[in-house]
Amino acid sequence: MEVERVQDISSSSLLNEAIPLEFIRSEKEQPAITTFRGPTPAIPVVDLGDSDEESVKRAVVKASEEWGLFQVVNHGIPRELIQRLQDVGRKFFELPSSEKESVAKPVDSKDIEGYGTKLQKDLEGKKAWVDHLFHRIWPPSCVNYSFWPKNPPEYREVNEEYAVHVKKLSETLLGILSEGLGLKRDALKEGLGGETAEYMMKINYYPPCPRPDLALGVPAHTDLSGITLLVPNEVPGLQVFKDDHWFDAEYIPSAVIVHIGDQIMRLSNGKYKNVLHRTTVDKEKTRMSWPVFVEPHREMIVGPLPELTGEDNPPKFKPFAFKDYSYRKLNKLPLD
Image: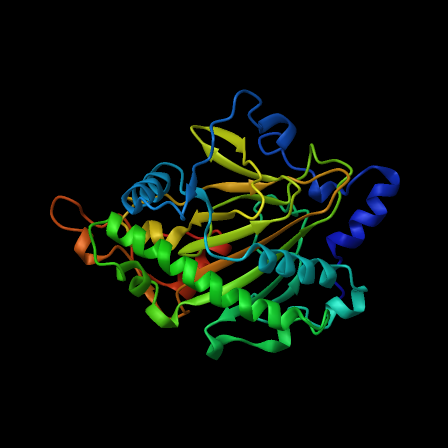
């Protein structure tokens, strides 16, 4: 069964300036109706190069408690490496369909790795205006190169180099967040499985959409991961839900956007917030983003850290093996 890709739908839709019905969101989701239009509060930006380490720690912890999302600058990932990562990803999506389909997610696969379109069940049967590519980049024992594009030829080298840098940054942030809970620096890293934690690269490709007022690139969701480190291209689209409003996130060149995901919220027993967010699309330009999801391995059981619970602070979340948590969430099943 051939899957229709949004990139192809976009090409035909732009000719008649209409989109198929299954992409039109209900009024409670349509960005033209639901995006806040007044003065927008600034999403926190943290300078990791600041010599005042205590100030950096306070900023990361405060943003994770109040927003569940922040942007980091002077983060140690070279600007030119981010540009190369975006360059090879863009070139992959510009390849002919037959080449992209060579790394497609198999129809019968229980995993999400590969080139694809639909990710999770939508209770209203609606579709998101996005194609994607998933593949693990760390640890080496989990990497399956059959889902890494062969073209452009430098794709593998760039992604392997990026994996080293993104792992270092994630461990820095997890260390700060652990200390913010009054725990030892490696507590959250260990809570996600230590060296067995998996780093999943995703490339989101949101082609031009003739009706950006009606469609969404990705509907409102929180990330399954522990923490997500994302770099976008220059086309805006990320929106964050806070104080009952959808706010646009400012684009800062070469910044890394950090999302607190479900597993850090659960490990911290709710002290850190998992951010509800979504993506809008553009009428004329292609938006792309490169999130890396730092996740426990499938069998890892994740629940509130015992050091954080007691008679005065009972566990707020039920422990789940990550594979079971993911299955239940993606299929809209109860999680309590």
